[in-house]
Length: 189
Image (cartoon, rainbow, N blue to C red; front, side):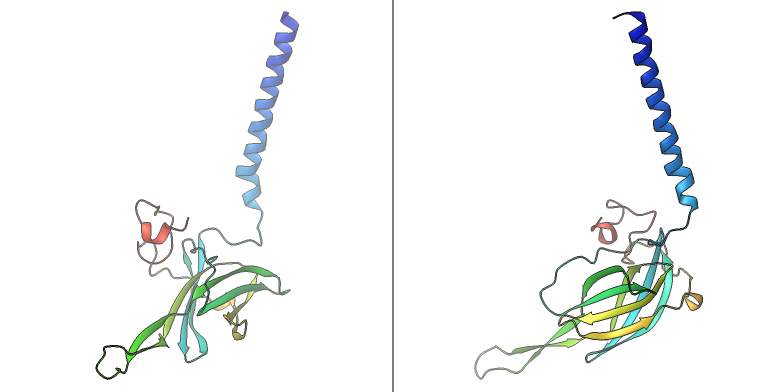
């Protein structure tokens, strides 16, 4: 190889490195300055639901810091499905979670220790959803796709206090938690 080809190769390498640095700088410093309609980083919409029979009501809704769990498990029965909708009814986020129940053992067959198991709904369910600044409606359906709750998300009245912030066991993989320091919150990541 002659000196001219060696210089061309080195210039090409230097130019490629400079281009990579420029692109990386744009991705790190410039793009985060522009607001996005996607989920807000480190923000979770905590929703406490009260269920009685087949009726569900929102008891509390607030924004907290952290990361929501993965609600992409495909349950076979006794689940609820949520959708967070924009003002144009575009689905921003969706997933499923189990309807909490308790098992009640009733009755005995004469001379045997067998009874029937009845599942009764527990009264409270807390879910941690991705927070979207443009989210307008929380829609919850049952496992038969029947709508059981449609709740407007009023961002002006959302409580932003973080009472259970940065605490292992709160159901959210917080910023200071990882798989090793808090397995129960971060096992889905």
